[in-house]
Length: 510
Image (cartoon, rainbow, N blue to C red; front, side, top):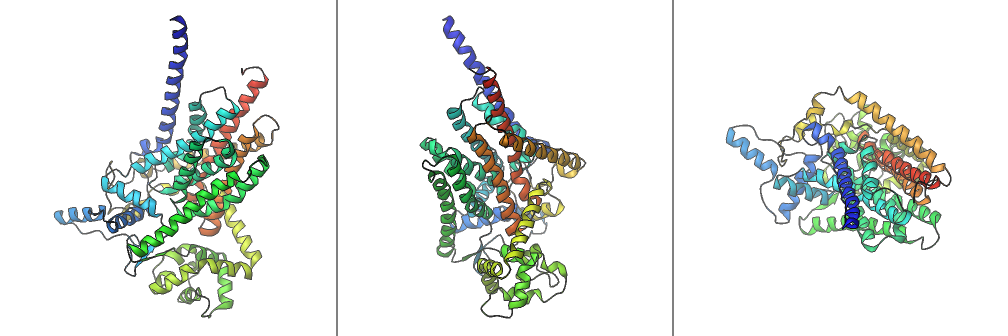
């Protein structure tokens, strides 16, 4: 009896400690939601909901969309109707916007219809917990550790929550899935050869959902394949091909989803998928693309000359910025949107060919522009774009579906006195994390090689994210902030294993 009590007490204490760690991690991730009083959202939140609602209707899951419900209520009270947001439904010219993730849009539309759109926030938190739990579980089993698995998982998340993490957990956008993708790829790259089959399956499922959640994630996964190959070869030549093969499975699922989207659009909606010409617009703004068009156009064999002609309708220099090229409709700043729908599709479909044509024409200038944009993007890590302003609130005003109420500014947006000090504190956290990571990565013999490799792959993933979002699309603080919390998370993991090594060498571990 006495022995049983002795063994039960530590077990009960361990269970209580693990519960407290898990509760603290979730509280840290939900801290911004609690302080703000409601979710954070963006211009495109309504786009995902409306596109998901349209897709559900096409699939036969019919009911009033959130916008239709809102307009019905407005009609009953005599208020004016709210116009649907631009480019969220299937357009009159039978095209579907492929720039948004169809699976994420379907999920958002379904949750909005159920009146629990906050389920996206729960999904964000669960995905983060699982993507950190998996590598820590494998590391504890293979490398040994003197603290509980709950502490190994939750302490890095709590430290990361001092940065941008809780802002993106509360954000009704798919951005949290970018770091989840990087964590899944890093886990498979470093531990994939010795993971249990269900652990591999879970990592692939997490990575697959992440890769189909946003178009930029597909490009990130593609660029992480060579990173996985090099890292796997560096760690061991034994079955070095297996981790990159797992990453290729995730990438393949992403391409399969794009193929299925096009098939479904054609068969179900009798429409074609069109992806906005972000790459074309980026290369025109950077200069090499516009100079190439100046030399080449008019040319019937270069579809992008149609866009070049539209750019000549005005001499305003701001018409050449990527955002204006892709989205603007005015005569002074617009170009792409002023084209006929068929010409828009032709220009959009030719953006990859345009990229390689410009690269061949000006390889140095194009490469320099990519590097410059990547460096700019890597420095832009503020959370400002997660905070809805009046224009964002107005864009989402026609949509219901939140359990907590309507799309309105919360406490954080109403008074921004906190923003400057918090941004400074977060930048200091990232700087300290980078220094700590650099020191411990180069410190010989004290941190296990596989833990160093895990963190190094995450750091390279942050740079890949900057390359994709800054170099190919448009540098924006939102894209940098969505992954930068991996920096304090990785630094904390390094510190934990460094302390474990210290205690081992000093005789503190048994």
